[in-house]
Length: 283
Length: 354
Image (cartoon, rainbow over all chains, first blue to last red; front, side, top):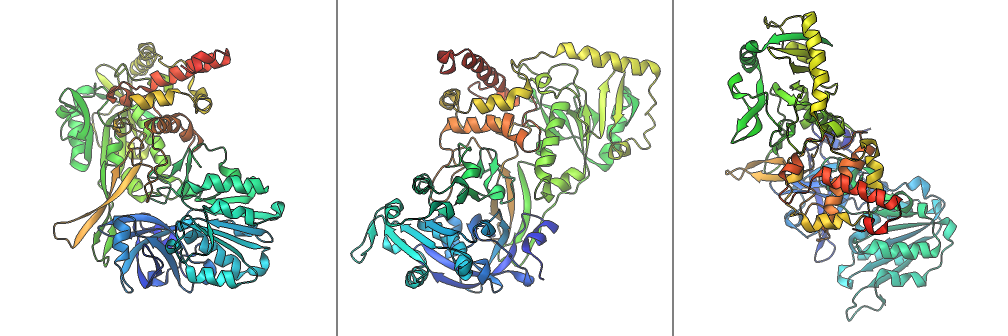
């Protein structure tokens, strides 16, 4: 078995990234690109869905980016979906296949997939929240028979901001996936639901005791989706959230990602509602 | 481990001896204040100093520290480590307690090799505090008026001699071949005992609450209106965390050399009191109000840190209180929370909401 990157980091410096090679860059929207990345020296990322890496360009900086590809589809590489929102991501958007970027990780706990087997899974990605959840969705689909129903409610601000539209079409076409899409603002070609993601909940019915709810999206979204899930009767311990914070160092030191006493980068970023409902700063 | 003595008159020679082999850091008078700086002779050091402007954390995790040196194309990148043998001379016991917390923070989970390398190469000579430093110090309340067990050498002023407690082999190394070191006489043992018992009454208690109750006091005070009051006063300048011996939060920045070909990644001190501290890409700020940020600071000092490494996050040095431009002090805040709790227990809602 090849060496894991996380082990390699501990032998030198936890802050020294390896230089990984970009195999492919594919535009997803006007603002988002999907990078396929290969680690050097046969290193293996060995990630779980829900984990993240620290991505850096020397001279510009470093930022946490969730891993978009499923562990079940690694093939020696992994994918990052990156939105152009700042200095670092602007530079990243100018990189091409063959270029290198710095990688540290993977960090945090991913989702506890073993606890999801045999259950119905309700995914509720909002906007860029599909980037991390795509990893878990594809892993579930690659083991489709181990799970019950797969329901995906996906909301974006407008149709042009929808990520992975080809894959959405693939999920739409599958008989064993229930996909519902919505946009906050429609354009002239949009035929589907218009409204925030919570407007999709009346369209579904679930058997709550056997349902796992998964939430990832912009900060404002969690509270409202949580209310809907609790309203469906899904148990606190069965609602899982992938939380966003400024996870600058990734190794539980720098302090930026603290939610009360918890370090999101190490204790999360995936938490069940039962784990965080007593934390005043969580949602 | 074992006790020795050294005549005070022999101190300059010992310091000179240390300077030959070590990067020596000691308390130095600077413009009416004191600062831990590099020193080259005993005459630069004042062991009767009061609390330094910055705590000795600045030696172990400097305000600006190179983590990685790189060529911009990424073809070469190396971790940077500071392995200079260093001695920190004359550290007060509150600051040494703070180092215990830093040691835990940087070694648990992922070991921080940058900190740990520097720490491994640093020998600490602490000194017994015999008089209070400032009116803001509350070391007696915080239990930091006595030396913790992580010193290498510990000095106590006995008048004409220093008692030197040897706490580690690393400390013993600093005394090797020093001829002025003696076995303490029976009289010196007694003198030490007298000095140690006399010091206590000189230090006042300032807190109205016992420190073992602080985590629970902070827990019940989470929704206190006091945080909003502090938020209205606070200038969000971040001075309180800069001068705090147990604050170690940092940011990481890249800088490019003038050649534009190479550069370095630096760790720089950051502060949870600054507006952007908890802001993520896209602009959402998870701790947008000053009140919430002050609350986070106090929660971290007196509750959160005790949940993680089992040590309170405050050593009672008083630096934050004496530095704050608007007079926010830990003693003031904790006592106010304690008074409001008493009000709460007596059902006097008006006191709680004041």
